[in-house]
Image 1 (tube, helix red, strand yellow):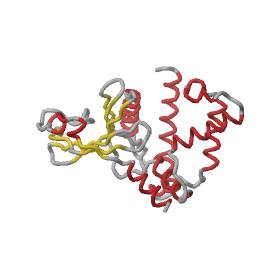
Image 2: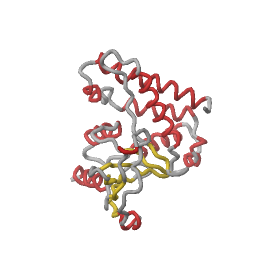
Image 3: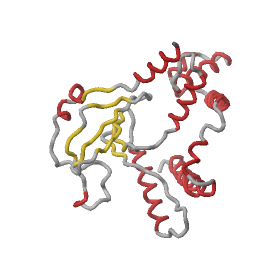
Length: 247
């Protein structure tokens, strides 16, 4: 019974809202004057225009509760996007631009197979605290893998969200080390040792083979390594250097 109630509660997290209730102007929107996001590198003749927006949105059960929208294009196809608030997406936009540049540089000397390709998607900031992110169909997020494992491990108890589990471990560390619990409300006051300890505890509790399903994307490890690990690590090193240098 507890398992069924927990599963039903998790399904309810994927709530939907009617567009007419949250944005009546968008619900009645219907013309072809606005291009869809993420087409900056297309010829004007190939640009797909926004015809209308889906009548229903889906709220994802993550921390900032982003909304999944579906844009209907002038070519008759559907283009899903994620509307994310409470976060500045300008940095994400720059990261995607860097990945596109890396792909262009590698494509000039593409000789061997498999090719070195960094996966990227469209990020369109709409202001200082919101933006649109292209929805990648058919992808499995690390959050989904972890969530399914969590559901299997605790079928007879209430499943905690990753953020709740993190705060629970952090609070336990504060109590064990006699740190003031008032500091939990201010992230700037969290000791680095506490964060390292909590992350290590969560890593130890998570099975080491949880990400093995991602390797099935390639025929063997020799294909997986150049296609993903090498390029991702190289781009990550550049991004980390830029972040530390405030570039």
